[in-house]
Length: 321
Image (cartoon, rainbow, N blue to C red; front, side):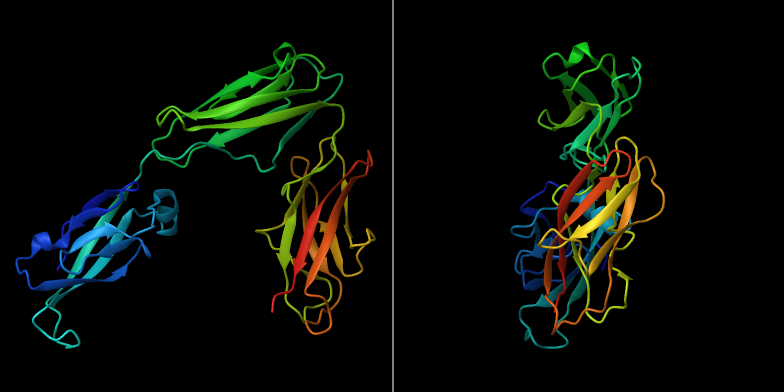
């Protein structure tokens, strides 16, 4: 038996509706058999009330992409007769098919989507007035959101820089030489007043050390009995290094004694795109679980060929059981 669709907002809690409304007998008992939104709902055995499960929060932005873009949730509810033995194979009065349409609520704050964080930029000493320095982009996962950007200058930054906006992108341009910080605010004007996200762009005159896309370092896992020079990273978790000058980047994996690792090697993969270099991690020899350590705490060092400026970050390698 298919029941009429029920619309439920993602912020809903507690009892949502009752499937007993469609039935007459007070002898019926209700059991949730399946749900296409795992662990999200519960059904009261006596009243037939459908509720959001205790401790669960509905999330439109997480569910819909995982459900192939569909807002439709399918609940299968089994109806039993309390006068019959519970374990009887014949004790199924009805099977109810209830569709729940999950609706979006503007409850998310905007987010900045630049790949590298913190938001670092450089400007040359002889930069022309109104030359482009940096762009910071923001988005909002809510369907009805409207992102508006604004900016605040720190100190006398306004004497040296200008900020313009295009859609949800802030473009920063220098008018003089100076080291300054600029705060960009992304506000969802269609949402609550609290839906504001701030990002600070730090502009440095001259050169800057290379920047890794993962500020707190990288963690990778690999299996024993690998092949020699096996690549550990994939296209989804490659390391990325940004050069501000720009310049070619050389990578070295350092062991716990700050010496080049004899086991691991980081290799830049091809040419840069927008001064960003992709890098892969390789294991140089076959590793054995019984013989070799299971965890390697290393350091990844990036060096620019032109300036010899370097940056380091943590590199953790794990060989799971």
